[in-house]
Image (tube, rainbow, N blue to C red; front, side, top):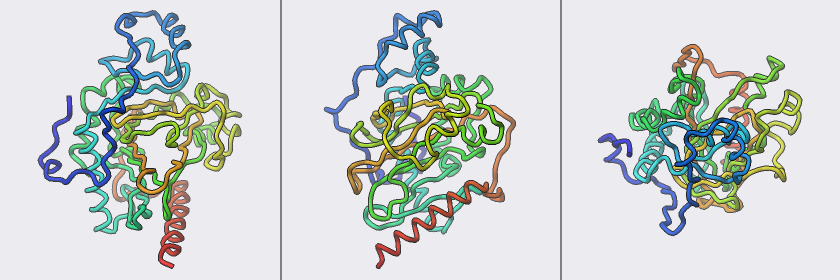
Length: 331
């Protein structure tokens, strides 16, 4: 069931770049589990080991034994079209609205976290990444709390909450390959690097919950994962690849194929990257949104919050890339 759109959203035009809704392009059937809901963990693990790496599941009222076993084994799981078309279009329209408001206000940080603007394929200002998106949208705040996501929240922890104002909040990402683009791709990395570097030990599960808004085939680029690397040790986490530098494809990587509305969960301890689209212009557009589930002490941020040092470094690089692109295009 869809989350009702607030009145303000009803008044918005359709998203500027709606996803493809080709009725002839439908995903393969989800894995049939109706007869497998009471499996013992050992049997579920045996079945999960036989499933193809591109298997798609249906999000139910609770994660099934096979879904949990697949996630434990490979470090990720894909749920088929958890959001419907009105919700996808509504979220994208809200992001268009937020983008316009930030540009009009000249705002480049939210709660201390930089907002990255570059140029779109038409040479106009374009939002590539922002945190705390749900703070600007009643619809998004309600959507991420919808009852259908309760199994995901409980997977993170029984006391988990949505961190709208914690960490980086709800993060919205855009990737596009064009002249002036800030983010056509993202090199290999793990989300455990900082914890391992400081603590010299591996953290516990770091589950990233992402909603995807575009039809992305393996040939279109997109999210790549190295299955099973969420269980690697400290050495492999630090040195298997050069974080945020190594771009080359890995023969063991799995491309995550998505349809608009798909939900993914992947363990941030695993190696992952975003492959650039072979296309250019608007055909290369890829959008995703990541929802933070937080279990530790409540640590909200505010407009007075300082920008973390590592984020200042990334922001400086992005500002340099943006300025260079504008100069090249303008010249």
